[in-house]
Length: 261
Image (tube, rainbow, N blue to C red):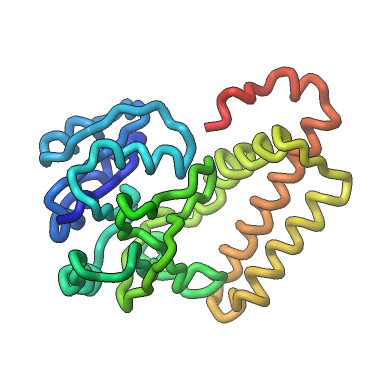
């Protein structure tokens, strides 16, 4: 018996397909919604999911909310834009979860732009622990950004899941500029981290070189180059915004640090 754990915010376009894939291995679905203004909640409820309403706490904290509502020991955490592949479904069904010594299982993740599977720039295999026994202590780290499951005896399985990361290249550039870099800059500023005039350029260049050269983006053609440029831009903007907080009192005064999320 497995409980699916899905966090949502305005995922009406994704939630039905997501629930359909997890239903192949889960007999309970919990959706933790952070105030969706579209049809996410009504769609989830119509498909038999239990919806828990919780203002967004940050990535790991939000994903752990479902633990107190779950009927089963084993949790399968899936984002609304992720899907189980047939081989992942088969791999989970083949597990003897009642007797396994492992407290978590990891799957490879195929990160997509549109319908294109990006295999370079560190985007694959991208192992993620997603199936975990929460009553043995396995759970997401209670951090607000880029949380992962902490487990004592995990196991990697030979199966992939799909992650429809970005609908197109426009989203690849829009999300870092609109959300990711500003959020990261706020967190860094609150933690006391500071930048200098060279920081945006150096960090942006480092991110690009790491993706394009060391993570072999150059063999990915246009998509590899584009992902590397996007990573560099995101890093550049993160430190440029941090520097702006330091050097422009008006920008700092107008920023609401209580609304990082």
